[in-house]
Length: 65
View 1 (tube, one colour):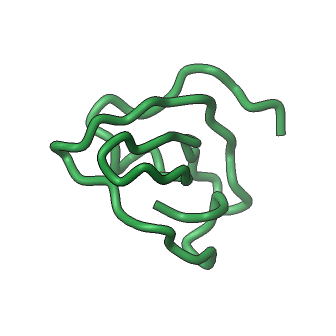
View 2 (spheres, rainbow, N blue to C red):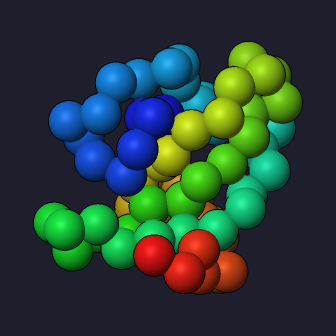
């Protein structure tokens, strides 16, 4: 998990395969990858995760930016 849609952004925590996640929306970063903004119920943290790291490819709703 990152505070923004870039690997250069700080990490507020992790999202593991057993965590319960709530997806909000996705955006396309400058590097061409898509990132999903989510809430991790297990760690109680919000953050961005690159969609290729999520088993279901992340959110289908575009954030608008």
